[in-house]
Amino acid sequence: MKVSERGVLDRRTFLKGMLAAGATVTVAACAPVPTAAPPGSNPTPVTTVVGPAWIHPKSLVRDRPGYGGAHLTWKIGDTVKWLPAEKYPNDAASDALAKVSKTNLMEVYRRMYRSRVFETTMKDVNLAGWPRLGDQSKLKSGVYGSGHMRIGQEAEAIAMGTLVLQPQDYIAATHAGHHDLAGRGADVNKMTAEFFMRKTGYNKGYGGTMHLTAADLNILGMNPIVGADPPIAAGAAWASKVKKSGQVAVPFYGDGAQNSRYFFNTVRQSANYKLPVVFCVENNWFSAGNFTAMLHPCPYLADYAVGLGIPAVPCDGNSVAAVYAAGKELADRARALEGPGHLEVVTFRWYDHSGFAGAKAGVDGAFGLPYRTDDEVRAWMGRDPIVRYTAWLLEKSLATQAELNTIKAEVDKAQNDAIDFSLASPLTTPEDGCANVWPLTERVPAMQFFEHTIVVPK
Image 1 (cartoon, rainbow, N blue to C red):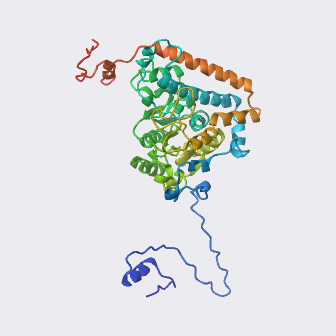
Image 2 (image 1 turned 90 degrees about the vertical axis):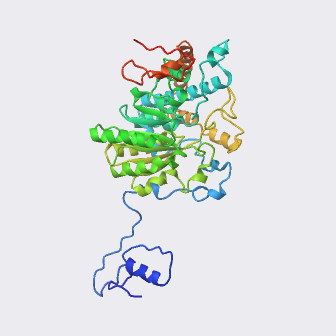
Image 3 (image 1 turned 180 degrees about the vertical axis):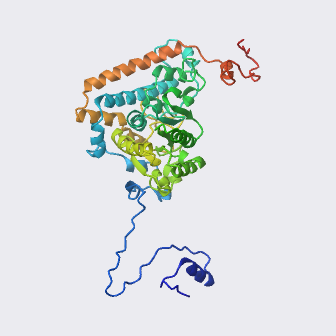
């Protein structure tokens, strides 16, 4: 085999030699090999490359407790290996959160608790009706669909929406986006009315629980198309960059959606154009009912984006402090037009992906589901993000229990009043679905409604 004049085999010569020898598969890497320095010279030291400068340090070294390459050994219940500590660690993230104003810290608590109460109430209403009504038929006439609850995942959406993002920033939510609305300070009356398909809801009863969105809060829909949020948010980020408005866009999506064909192309193009977008994947372990470890070969979902040259940061998704620190780092970078980031919040959902299998009215958590153990569920419920945040506030003397109890009482009353408001509001009718499609007051001819009289306004 001929050796090049540099004293090393270049790639072409190496491949030719291997092919001549009959090799069918060859992997070759080009890396300069330093030659020996002449006697008496001052050789230049060889630099050891540990990774491109653009790779976020947290993307290189990870703890891997049975995940990533462990597809065939993953067992039901293994998510307990990822349980965070019961209390927030005394670290830089905790110190950063402690510097946030008390007003904002208390608003985080209010919104977390409001989101929990909203979803828990809607769960109980679906399963048992509303106890304050003697005639449950009135209630059932306005409840459609089962809903997708994210109870147990309040910390990440509220921390991002309340502390990290500014009011003018964009959010793209999924069909389980109630926390995202709560994180932006949504009106609980409108949220509840939409759940009951009332004309006073955020979407006038057109959407219900799966399409509960608020354009006035810059929420780009609760999209039921799996994996659609990243390209929607990237489009908003592109507009922000063109207009030089300084807005950041954040799509929230699940671990299953990250396998969507839309995801990688969106992140790639966002990196190409340095769009101000922070991709936030909520790793709650099961997609609809399959283990995340069976679907993803890398130890963290954030690692999907490392090779594209953007920061990839996993964090404790049940910690307001951890999400705030990691999210702010990526959002500030995106806002400065330094490019997108990829944030992974590791969390756990208390209920099934859709509906209330294994759930009971008045009882937290869903049990007896085939793809997880009840002990596993109870262990993660022991890392309740609201309980952990409460303990942190009290330990840091940033709030008193009396102050938190006052907030809870106010939120409970507001939710009860919201149901009364909703039930007193008019239902959306089938004919209403034909409105707001054509310009002005025109309606689409509804030929499919054979048993309804279509009233066209003059």
